[in-house]
Length: 124
Image (tube, rainbow, N blue to C red; front, side, top):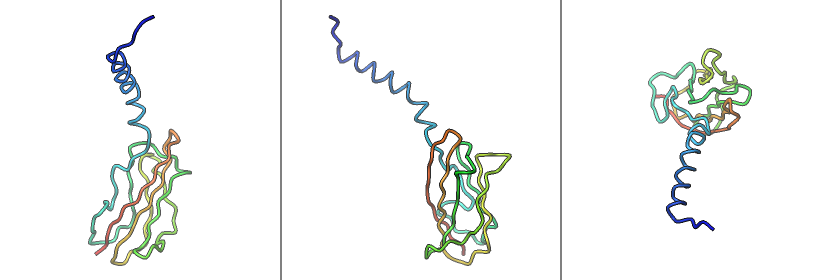
């Protein structure tokens, strides 16, 4: 019977971690950038919100909503995934008054992983 030493188990652990690393990196869609940016204060209210993710999005299962400081929704339109760049989602924004706004996004990437998040921005 062969005896396994702690060195064997350490080697197996390292091999397992290396083998799983590529899967973990692409496990979920991540928000890479947003306009207006998270935590920003803009002088002029934006006409549209633009979110860019690290993976292609499934438009049917991806959405963005904007709410004012009281939590009331300010958009009635549905977000659209850009046909020329499926990693970008845009949302037309009505004229916003001065104040704080929260952006809630929920996306499904092309590999069927779901992610969601929230961030805020302000209009002077």
